[in-house]
Image 1 (tube, rainbow, N blue to C red):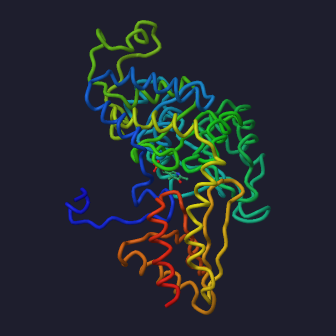
Image 2 (cartoon, protein in one colour; image 1 turned 90 degrees about the vertical axis):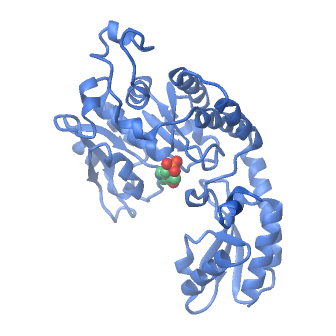
Image 3 (cartoon, helix red, strand yellow; image 1 turned 120 degrees about the horizontal axis):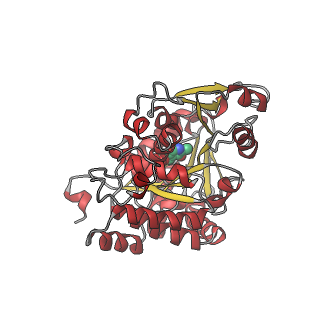
Length: 396
Ligand SMILES: *Cc1c(COP(=O)(O)O)cnc(C)c1O
């Protein structure tokens, strides 16, 4: 009996991609073995993070890197670094930002629910641009430049394809002319693997990726990559600080006057990362980086075949394959025809979830009568089960 059955829970077949609310992704046996190995011995966490940083820097092209508990934690810690820098008193005060740089500029078309992680640092979001023409979130470069002032800690630039927003390279140029860092939320922007380096190459000072989505690392892991000085501030605000100045591993910074004293347990302490997550993430990242977008795409396309075949000839639906221009992950789009298509699509989502076995399909376009099958979390056996259940439900 599996652990979930033992707890009296039903497992779910995940046909909806790398959703956090279902657990994200499956970890490869190699990743699980590395985590078990990591748990068996003790290691200085600052040394482990420093080594992780070198590996992340190599993979991303950034100066430095850090393992965090997820992309959202990476946003919080990254912004905390932009606000406090190496100022121990400022670190001590967070999230109280009185007297500190406490504004983060963002394009209106880039606002999203994850910026809660930024606001958690005690900063205010300064919005620029429009919700509307030009594009759906039109922003002029001069609006960004004008919003930058003495209180600006950073510019937040999530990777959202809102038409009309100023693209990252141009945002970075404006920011750097004013000496302001840019922090990029690229949580779900993998694959393509080229994105591991792309945003750093385009000028980002900090970039976050989820470890538990397509990278296939532990669900509570993520990557923060970027400038070495900002990553140092992150480490100081995140690691256990129950240390003595006489023996602290970072004490050269005290001797050289770079730090006024040992920081206390910091803003990031509630986002503690275990050595198992750090090692698991590194193992998954190396595997992911060594893989191929084309091979993944082919494998995922094959996984969709039995599902597409099972739906062939069923009246009242239209089935098609989709691959987004920016993301090489295929999906099978199932459009329900006729009146009340949205309500029927939502009904179908619930019937599949409440059926035997439980199946979660992508419902992001259900209000338009569209369900999608994302193959990333499906084994061949599970794909066959999804095919059978969809056929049963759709044939009525
Ligand atoms: C998933 C996601 C996050 C949160 O990432 P975690 O690794 O789960 O913390 C943040 N931003 C975007 C755009 C995401 O898709």
